[in-house]
Amino acid sequence: MEKLEQQNGALNKAQMSVLRLLGRMKTVEEVEELRQVILDYYAKKIDEGMDKLWDSGAWSQERIDSILREDVHASKHPQYAI
Image 1 (cartoon, rainbow, N blue to C red):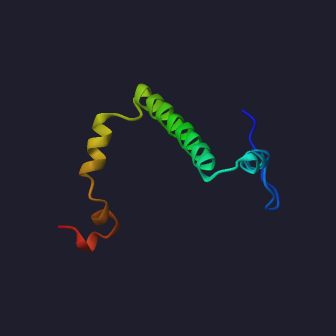
Image 2 (image 1 turned 30 degrees about the vertical axis):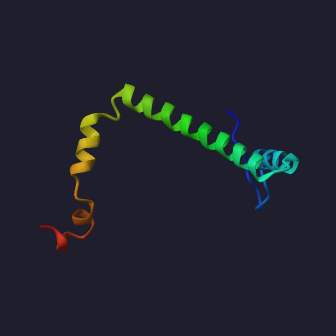
């Protein structure tokens, strides 16, 4: 997969491509539809990544339960631990 480089604050190829698409849109609704397509794309990528973690055993129900039981506040501020 080719990485897109951003140099000196300039827009990269992907950003320019999205701007060209936005330039063709005539209504706010079209922009919102494109936004939703992009959000759906990234949601799918996240789901696929989580599936890989789950299938590999790196993520599990036990791990989720452990995180839910963890007292993050107390670990960062021991003076407040009960």
